[in-house]
Image (tube, rainbow, N blue to C red; front, side, top):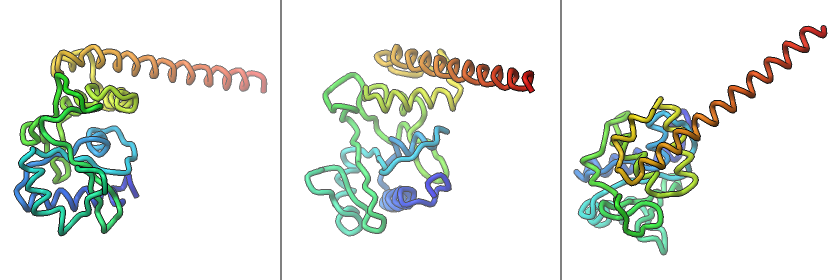
Length: 200
């Protein structure tokens, strides 16, 4: 059901997005669901929304109490009681990954949102930039597959913050190494099949 867009995560994503839009709160979807919107299909168990600080205050005062449950000991994590799916609120001005200050912070969602399937989703350069800035293996892996699925090359680094350009190039080279490995594996299998056909 996940890849059909009908699973619990999708239901929660649309419920939260609809509530935000009804309240006039600027948002965009980031994280794993944004990765899916940008052509790399993988599962995820939750949703991440980017709001401004004012938007987050508005959300907690107007929406969170009646519609969603705050997860205990997590200031910006909520649960959708209708599905049990959790979602995180990321806030403009905070920092990806460890949360320690760095050159890249979460932007204003209204400046980086694109419309996908009636939802506001972070644009591809910002998604890649944030994942590289987070400096986690999982995020680097996502960037490798985003490069592959979107046919990105060296020219894309010009759209990224200078501090993550070398990491982007490393991910690009890793994608090429992986693809070369797969090609050589396919060639080896073809050779084995040809040898088997000759012996018959």
